[in-house]
Image (cartoon, rainbow, N blue to C red; front, side, top):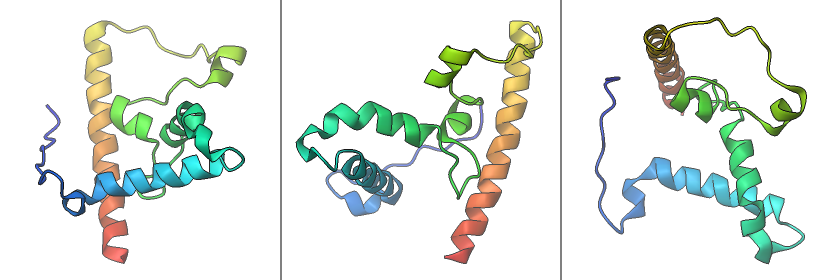
Length: 122
């Protein structure tokens, strides 16, 4: 549908999957900071750390992981307290699907361009 290619890596060889290893390192760093007072309770902070990670704009892509994956920003706890803006237009399922596909294609193109520029800088 979106031209995403699946990659294969060697089992038990983490060096071959650099993106996953980078995400794991970032997650470990965030968990270490969140559980600095009680390091053994890192699992109690996991959901909040993942929420923060998924809703933060990433420098390389210029977008949040949630927006890149789902085509929209995620709803945060603050949205439940204060509500969401009511400016969402009425549209059919077909119209929504078409708009979502166009939005994601445009976003993917932007992300690819930004990621490519970042990669060339390194």
